[in-house]
Picture 1 (cartoon, rainbow over the protein chains, first blue to last red):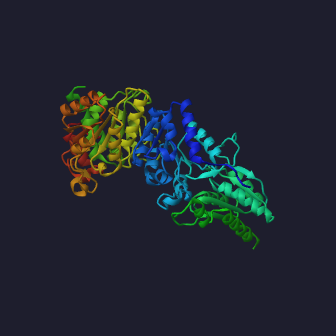
Picture 2: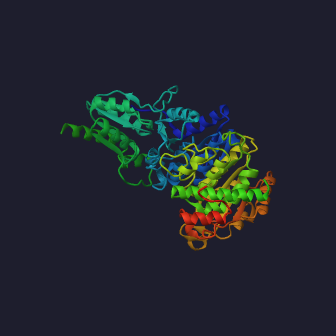
Picture 3: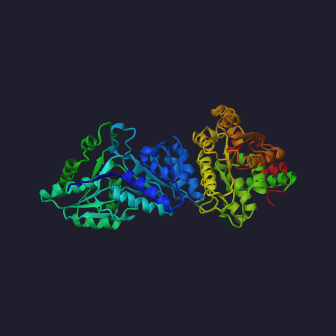
Length: 317
Length: 278
């Protein structure tokens, strides 16, 4: 399966947010000197009175967003994932997660595909940092269409805080334009019987391509897009694991405490199933272009195919 | 309330603070006693709020950033009818509403923000102040911080942003008592001339004696008059940790702790209150 169109999840975010701003006067947007890179500049141009550049001071930005939420506004906070979930984890815990303040943290530049900037900016621990926090929801859109849907959802989600993980790179577009994002629902993109591949973000398109390759070897893979990592769609994942009996998880994140860990936690308690986690294995990233990096860390189609075959061999032996 | 009445009220609230921490056998009375005068003036004279309608949209808001001093806030909120006074005696107990640090998660009426991890509150207050301006509400936001807390970096980010965004409906009070858990602020990590620092950050600064009601009232009135100036206000208040209790005043170890029966008798006598058991 080859995807013809590519589009940045951050581009979809910027466009959607600016559009939502016309209909919802409660939306306010904050960034820390990264309006252009996070595409919140679209909102800034359209709604300058509701856009705040907070300078290179992320900790204060989180608190300010919480204060705006407590005043009845619907704040979106955007910077790179490294800063949004790493530098300010304590602020998020104290004034966003604990009081269940509906702050929308939408971070761009997550994962290895940041590319040339290297390890300092390649955030591979953000899902871990956010999913451990009580009250926090975690969404990782698989393409620009789903990103737009997710942003429409979180804009109206006043029940608590949400973290949305976006990227710098353009992602293959795998959804049709009219497909909606469904919060808390894992999406079975392709049915299969031999192995379940559960993926998030950019890795969903990689999983779909890997499925084609596996299919030519006579292996039937079920591909699931787990775009809501918290709360996890237990039913869909358990049903698929019950059917195939082996699960491969793949994410552009540390294999510790990300999607793979979340699925291992579920399966070990509810339905012990062999699992192979594909991701970055307890290492930091490095400079390079995005595609080279993905291949180097085993996050390309051939890496995923090899890992999936290994997983199948494990259950045979 | 006139000055004498405010002063008497502050001492009554100091007595409540001591009873709260001594009943709990846990808590932070020192800073709370030092802040009592500024907070009494705020809550009984200047803050526009409604204890019967804590979520009144146009209310002024108060954020206690140095959240460990919350016994004084809880004493005030109970006295003003936000909740039943009996709640004060379950402070810090399992399942009790009055958590060890202020919490909106526990829906404490009158508490506006979760605090306790130092450095967060001024940012939240800034957001509230910006929100009030954006919503065109004539709401003023007050925030207490402490001198030790200003060793954190985040309040200085907030200080820069408040001046940049011309947030003149924000008033920060600094509990400048020179004490922190490990000893004197000057010895642990000297914060220097806080009044000068905030002036340099572009704030209106009033450096006052935090126990002199004339100066306290002048400072609050100056803040109210600063609306339209485009500048946030800092009240840098020199205070005494443990103010009003002879054996606690300016003794850093009273940052936290509770009192013996004899100490309670002495403290209540110092404050001109009746018996602590009454």
